[in-house]
Image (tube, rainbow, N blue to C red):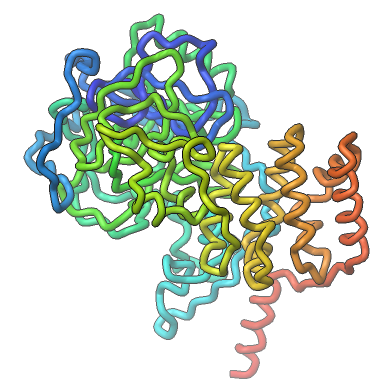
Length: 498
């Protein structure tokens, strides 16, 4: 994100941003510090920083980052900070949903192979969580897709419609000492709870660069950009939701995730762990800075690296836990202290840290699929594809296909159409999947990018694509009773028998 607030670390803000420096990347969030520019190729959300009150000047350049000598044993509680609901809401226009610059923006690029899950729930008999809940095996929930009211067989009991129902956590806007405005939990929040949707104007990349220039010319110091998907950003600088006030932390209690809701892609803030009442709600901005010095970080965490920005997508300190888990390196990173600290520089993936890529086991699959859908980092994506390619566990392969793996590969081949290495890796991965029927191939529309690979001048890619198409062509298409019709038939038979 790109937010510029002195001390606060929400979206990185821009102080004198140069359009030629702007690249697409992760989340650009507003903050009280200088604006941070997303890299040219989105890597995750581009976050903005939460904007400080209008009267406060950014102190990033004059105030050094705090020196945390005493290590805390619990979370930071900010129950003593003053509420700033009214004052904060005067700094922007509040909207409930995204506003789209063009009707084509924000559209999901995935052919989702059908969006109806297999969940069933009978009130008073089954566990309520069976209705697409957190502990269910709902295929939609596992692939970060919301169920649609008209399709889900759990009807009004479905627990996977949080964006559509705006099931937000209770929170308050407060005024912090050095970070401008921030968000505080107004009640305990369980892990993985949906906290808030990040909304604003959804704009194209050219418009994003233009707005960055205009905001700098207008003297606006606090930008709230978050990358939605490739070449598309959410700009909450002038209008958006209160999610714009979430600050950065080197040890965040929240994370940002991309979800598909109907035909649209939307960004949500979720609880990374159980959050206590009065904790500040924070997440890692994962922002690269171009043409600007890193800003002091005021998160106050024991593991604070001392500054925000100045890191690349392959910097371990800037990588979201989802990617560390998906790469299978979380424990190693923690054990070796690879995220760094104020006294020790963090390591960079494949530069001064070469992790061993290991095959997948069943439990790894959901996070690997989620990571492939989210990441904009080429290095991370290539390593994830390599993990799948070296996996011989057939159960894991089937689980990837079940979690709409072909749709993910469709996106990858489309977004990286000119990248020979990525394209070849994707084709090699699919060649190992134990398909019996052709249905998923057709539903995912994967034929289109694979046929394009068949026309490549690269002989390896051409050969892989040709072999894959021939294999798929040999498979039969199985007839399937539509799920809604199947449910109606089941209900009818039950009524007759009674």
